[in-house]
Length: 186
Image (cartoon, rainbow, N blue to C red):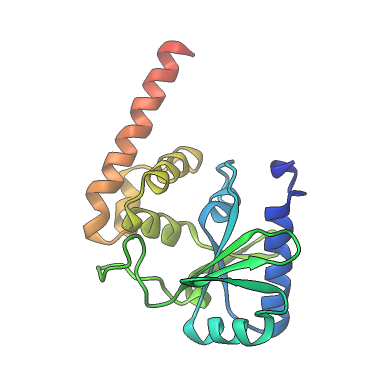
């Protein structure tokens, strides 16, 4: 059902996107849903969305608590009241992963989104850069799979912050190890 796009996560994403579009709030879909939009099929159980601080305030003013419940001690996590799916808001200027200041911050969604299937999705370069900066296992796995699906190589380094080059190379090497394994065990 997930890959048919009829599941609660997709429904929650589409509902959220329609609301943001109607309200004129700039946004970009992130996380697992963005990974899917960029051609790597994997499931996820939440919706991550990039907003500016102003966009987050407008979202809360318009839709919380009417359409989204708050989560105690999680000021940027909400629960869709229809399908009970978590919506995590990532905010321009904050930092991926640990949240500690680093060389890569969440950008303005208007400057890094592209339209895929009528939805503003974080562009591939920014998606990979933020996933590498987050330094989580799942994010590295996503980068390995995006490298494979999009046939990326060392030339992609030119688009990434220099602090992320080594992690990108490690993901590229992991993709190549996987390719060799599949060749041997096809």
